[in-house]
Image (cartoon, rainbow, N blue to C red; front, side, top):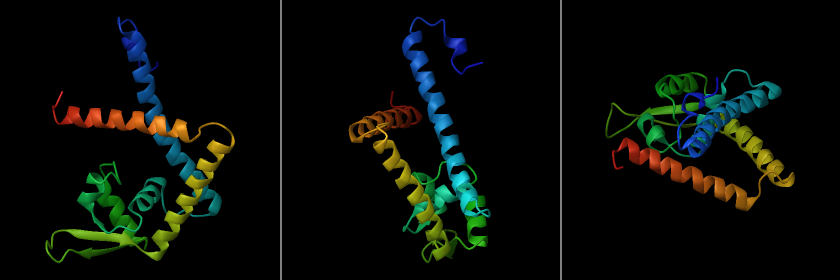
Length: 165
């Protein structure tokens, strides 16, 4: 059964159907992105790190952050950030250090090993961007429109959480 089947009888079913299809696509694209990263790592023989952890390393980049900042800056969306940070530190992908000001807070940054993972993911994304453009799947104007629309949805959802509308 599709995500939008129970709502198909709505008088606004055209827009609602499109919206529900978009939600489904966003969800599927995220899972597919993780599968693509996993496949790349398996191909390269990098088996000790999962795709979520690799994406976290990519998003952190050269920043030094606390676990709390990971969500607020949009680097990580999952609920188990502490677990993944702990594993990444244990595996040598990240350094951690207690914050001098607030001893309860721990700051993390990538190690050389973590930067290597970031480079692998970055190279994968660069190949994808080149392929999308080269094969005429999506050009600069198209990606700008997609990003603009997704940012507007993000803003709308954020406002919903804050009860603005």
